[in-house]
Length: 258
Image 1 (spheres, rainbow, N blue to C red):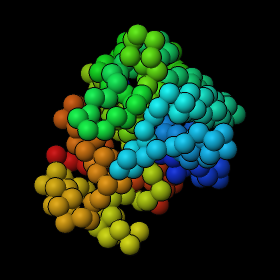
Image 2: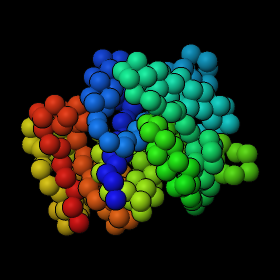
Image 3: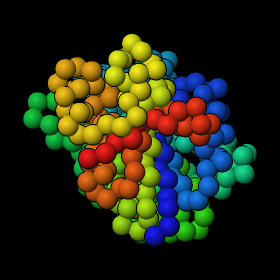
């Protein structure tokens, strides 16, 4: 099987034009088959304030009502996605911007929570692996926005870390997949106050202990949960860290192992 890299970038990169430019410069130099999944950043929240649309958050998660769904769709699948695509094209990368509704790429269902109504937030039920592979084999670099659909005409806002995980897992049937969760830190930290305390390797037992003692908190927990899930689903290698630093050989991130 040929190798493929799936990279996920968070809003902290998208929010900063200089960081985004540095990331895309490093990303454009990746060899082989690659897929990029991006989050939304603060732009949607900033724009909602300007338009007078209230943003509600519960435990750090956005409540996506009908008006906010319109907004995040326009920002994530439109402005952010196409800016990234245009920037990659300027760097000689044949990029194709997509969201879950395009080519029936990612199906999801509206989240059913026992006590919280998250609105139009989607949990993934199926990834169209054939559609992904067709684009990849046409030498397109897929740039995937975190908007999915339910197959019945309803768009849904879906967590970008989860999209990256499910896409990587689906593609692992046909490729040797490396999954990178890129964010502002150099990796998973032993001490959240010390950016140099990067763990070179993190296994599930150590992770559980760090969650219990609070070293790994709400911000990192979803990434580690997705990382271990990806390995169980057949992804060959999972790394959490700063993609630009890794590509420039300034760090190696944290390798996740079972």
